[in-house]
Structure formats: structure tokens, C-alpha cells
Image (cartoon, rainbow, N blue to C red):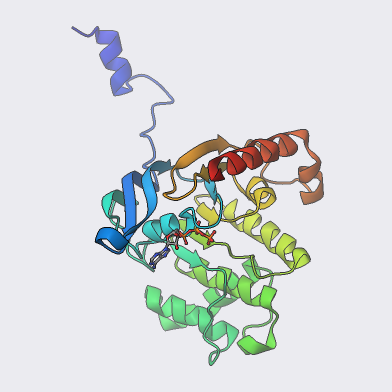
Length: 276
Ligand SMILES: Nc1ncnc2c1ncn2[C@@H]1O[C@H](COP(=O)(O)OP(=O)(O)OP(=O)(O)O)[C@@H](O)[C@H]1O
């Protein structure tokens, strides 16, 4: 028989800290995923269990072909798991509804202006026409491009295009942002600048991010949590919280912290072992 005090504690009665626990943003439960059928099936992922809480920035790293993009695509709702369940905000994810997406290539519509690309996403989301221009400008300002709404996509650099893609992903107005190697095609300097942008955007209250990369340095710089996947079929080989300051720190100073180096060493070691 349980004691009354235990029952009270369980009910949270009398405790000032007794807030209802926030629902996880992402739940991946016993997920396996195979492409194709029968003897030609390629098992890409699993089994994987992963729960992502509000406000986390989870980075998936691992060797090429280990299933990182597949896991992200499952969370986005582009793929349905062969077995197990994926839930985003407590329900089966639908692409374009439950998360903003950023891919390796910006995938902007070249026949539209920069602003037109973002307005399209706002229209898809159902924002009334008279509110779209103000929202578009606000989103472009958030990614450091306040004055280019009228430019054509081909008139801006690759780094700027990727920033526009991030603004478009934010237009979905979902708390969840999914980014699949968004900086892989960019030069080192642009990549660093965009890492800082993403770090800033993801630090906004209520934002949760899942980011795929090959770069251990990028993983430590961005992630509040780094998940290393084993070689295919990808399973969780390491799940590490990265406890580094998230705001008000110069990026160069951050990279010089001993904790940064320690996390990088641990993750790099796990990536190498997991790929063996
Ligand atoms: N549409 C598909 N049809 C068949 N096999 C696929 C498909 N997409 C991915 N695969 C296979 O599933 C495995 C995992 O691929 P995935 O792209 O998820 O890995 P990854 O870790 O993201 O790789 P990379 O880092 O090289 O982008 C690979 O063996 C890949 O060839």
C-alpha cells in the first residue's frame, strides 16, 4: 500500500515546482526503416529510440550512409517507418505541417523573387495576404537579409540563398526545425557565418532543432545534444549532452573552451568506433 505522502508527491500536490511535464517534440520508438523489399531491401536505420524535448538542438552525426538523412526524413514525415512509430507533437508527422525543413541545396523557386519564395510558404501556411509582406520582411531580417526581398534568386550568393531557405523554413512557424547538411555546399567562411545564424535562431524560446552533419566541429558548435549513429543500419552509438554556453559568447571563444575540445574528442572517437 502506498503512503499518503507518496501519493501526494506523485500527484504533485503542494509542490511549487509541480508543473505538468512538457510533451516531447519528437518521439522515435523502436523505429526501423528499410528501402525496398525482400532480398533487395536495404535496412537503413534501426532499431532507434529517441525522445527530443522542447528547446533541444539535436545533431545527428555518423559516417556516410549510416542513415542520418533517413532518420531526419522519418521525423519530417517523408518516410513511414517499416516498423515502430514516429510522432511529432504527439501525432504522425506530415511534411510541411509539423516542421520547417532546410536541405543541402536551398531548393528555392528560381522564377520567383526572394520575397516571393517566402510569401509562397506563408500562403501555404494560410497566412492572410495582407499580413504576408510584413511577416516576410521580419523573417528575412531574422536571417540577416533585410533588404533583398525584390531580388531574383540567381542574383544572390549561395550563402544568401541558404539563408533565404532558413527564413522559408521559419515561415512554417512550427517549433521544430529540421536541417539536413544545410552548409555542406558552402565555403568555410560562409559556413561559419551561417552556423552562427542557426545558433541564434535556434536559441529563440520554444525552438527545437534536429540537424544532420558530417562535421564533428559543427556538431559541437551547434548541438545541445549530439547523437552519433553506428554504421548502417544506423543505431544510437552515443547520445551526449553538450553543456556549452548558448548565448552571449563569441564563437571563437566558444571553440577555445576546454569543454568544447573535450566534447569534440569524445564525439570524434565515437564516430570512428561506430563506423568500424
Ligand atoms: N531512396 C532510397 N532507396 C534506396 N536506398 C536508399 C534510399 N535512400 C537512402 N538509401 C540507402 O539507405 C542508407 C542510408 O542512407 P542515408 O542517406 O540515410 O545515409 P546518410 O547517413 O544520411 O548518408 P550521407 O551522410 O552520405 O548523406 C544508404 O545505404 C543509402 O544508400
